[in-house]
Length: 163
Ligand code: PNS
Image 1 (cartoon, protein in one colour):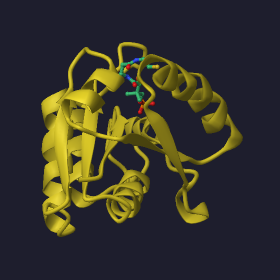
Image 2 (cartoon, rainbow, N blue to C red):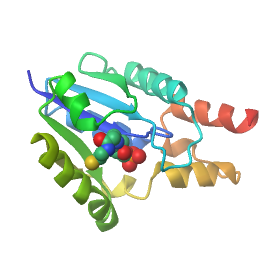
Image 3 (spheres, rainbow, N blue to C red):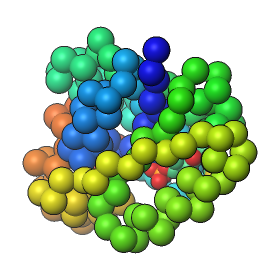
């Protein structure tokens, strides 16, 4: 069985992530979305809220037969891949900046465990959407609802009204 892992912070899971998940799922028998806590990033949604929003989105999009969510809790991504029998990691590339960010991680994961990373170019209509910009725009009162699946949009709204 060909298993791919799509790791990320997904804070929040955007329409860009959804597009990637759909395209990556088409390349594999199963896709695991590995939701990570990234201590280097200032987050907004807690891990459970992010996972719930992704699960709801997968249900709404009819993707649950091939795609599931797991928490990547503290350990190495390559260990997660080994434990879940995954052959490769998938990441989306929007810009050259993304490629520079990905390059050392890709080489390190390959060095550590021979795990390759497959890159999918983000569609140009979605390439300006990043979780960090969505958070910033939303915090400052901008409308981000058309950049997010409905479940992510409501999770973000709730987080911003209760903080
Ligand atoms: O969406 P992000 O925050 O850019 O995703 C970063 C992520 C989760 C892919 C990266 O932080 C990661 O792989 N974390 C797991 C820990 C790990 O394996 N670190 C070494 C990477 S070479």
